[in-house]
Structure formats: structure tokens, C-alpha cells
Length: 119
Image 1 (cartoon, rainbow, N blue to C red):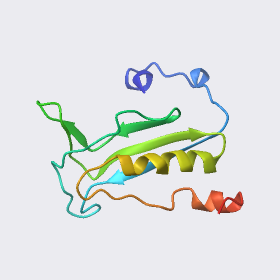
Image 2: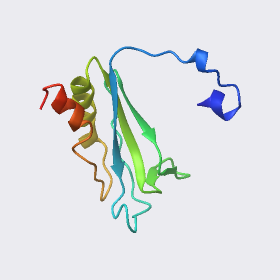
Image 3: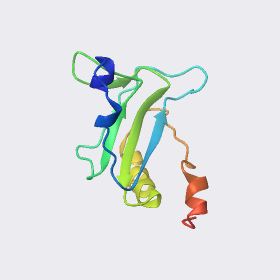
């Protein structure tokens, strides 16, 4: 992302790894309508290997707390050997991310999971 932002991106530098990755977006209360802002976010102290949290609609306050500031607040990103494995990892972390009004879809990747026979 930094290379893209600074105009140094080269497609030949992209490295792919085997497996599947999924992202579960946690949205603010009221999303997609009138959204809540300023709700304190509690994040897990540690994340399992292969799981990351990406910030979208968040803001860090001067006292260090992180609060909601947009509709799509955070994304739990997980990588696994299969899509089923990635989904299992991501959905296991989602309940550990807490803020008032948080909600997410529970059907991410379901079409492919169904095709794979995982559902």
C-alpha cells in the first residue's frame, strides 16, 4: 500500500501465497443509515497467527483509546489453507472485537463454501 501511495508500485513485486483469505467487516451501529460515532472499541490483546485487524472507520483519541468514526469500522482478516479454515479463524476473533452497536454479516464466503461442500 505504501508503494502505491508513493507511486512506486510494480505488479511484478506482488507475491502471492497459497490458501485463502477472508475479511469480515464490523460495522457501526446504525450502518448503513445514520451511524454511531465515538463508541470505544475493545480489541483482543493478541491475535492468532494468520489473523489481522485492519482499521477503517476508527479514530485514536489523545488518551490512546480507539473509537468508532465511520460506518465500516474494522475488518478481521484471516488467512488459512482453505476458505473454510480462513472463515473459521476470522469468525473466532470477531466476538473479541467489541463496541456498542457492532454488527457484521454472517454469510461472507458462503457461496464458495457451499460449492466446496463446507456448508
